[in-house]
Amino acid sequence: MKLREIVAITRSYRRFDQSVSISYKVLEQLIDLARLSASGANRQPLKYLIYNTPEDCAKVFPSVVWAAYLRDWDGPAEGERPSAYIIILGDKTLAEGFGVDHGIAAQSIMLGATEEGFGGCMIASIRRELLRNELHIPDRFEILLILALGTPVENVIIDRIKDGDIKYWRDSEQNHHVPKRSLDELIIKL
Image (cartoon, rainbow, N blue to C red):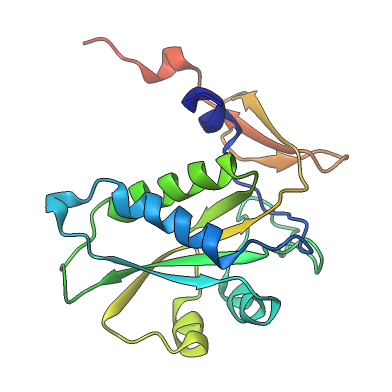
């Protein structure tokens, strides 16, 4: 697959086939893509936690805030939850701030997950103290992102923005619609 194809199908998936596991080895390989990616001033301050067992995933799930635009949805039901999580942490002993490093790392991981036949969602809406307490994360680490991963069971459709509304939504068949701005809107000429 060419990069354009991988980017086009790398969507934010929030419902998965929970019975399909992702091996620790595959998750390590995805983190290795992040390791090889750019880092501001080459500080490389990010650390990663891997969770891929049902018991460990159950510890992470309550800390995730799912899909703010879908007000009547509390997140994936049992059976449709992620089968793995990668939690991206910033090591405050290595840097005071983390800039965009975690975004670069997360996108590298998500593109790699797509290439491997998986999908996921980058989540910044996190109940951080709950997660810190549940997983015993030391204070020296800032919790930056949770990557929820698995085999997607939902269809994501890219739509054009109508009437300026950027909110994603689900239709009656549970297809997930994501409005995107046109390329003409994004490129400006001064």
